[in-house]
Amino acid sequence: MTFGENLKNFRHAKKISQTKLSEKTGFPQTTISDWENNKYFPDIIEAQKIAAVLGIKISRLLNDKDCFSKNEAA
Image 1 (cartoon, helix red, strand yellow):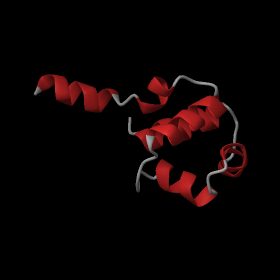
Image 2 (image 1 turned 90 degrees about the vertical axis):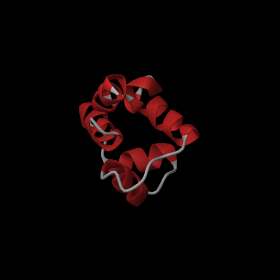
Image 3 (image 1 turned 135 degrees about the vertical axis):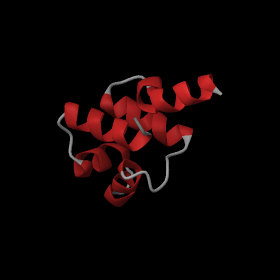
Image 4 (image 1 turned 30 degrees about the vertical axis):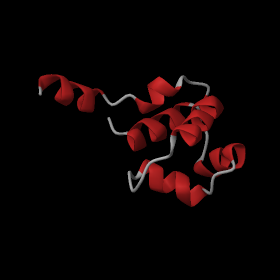
């Protein structure tokens, strides 16, 4: 899964809207939408803040098994 898919899935699992996540993190809702659509990605500090609000470890948010398996195969 991509970062955007992970973010969207964890946000939905916690029943938090993009607007609510925006309020809790201070990041614009449009930025959260762009992250979920993989237009660009947060820096590590932003990702840590998102993970904290979602109540998950940052490693779970950043985990991209497809990416890791491709790198391991190379």
